[in-house]
Image 1 (cartoon, rainbow, N blue to C red):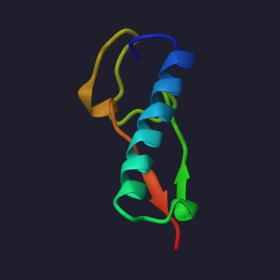
Image 2 (tube, rainbow, N blue to C red):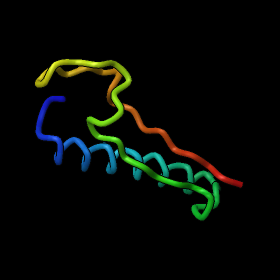
Image 3 (cartoon, helix red, strand yellow):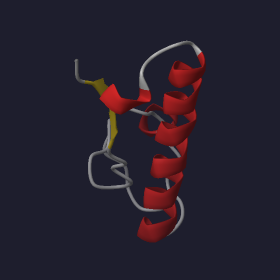
Length: 65
């Protein structure tokens, strides 16, 4: 929640893209990977605005076979 909601959503999307790219580099078919950045909408740990929480710096990637 440190930074604007728009910035955090973009950051979430960039993080998930980085992880997906690493999976593809390891041989996972990119066509089965779905990305969905959450930004501040689905925090792992609720925090007040402006609080930096390492648990909220995560990427969730669904692989659908």
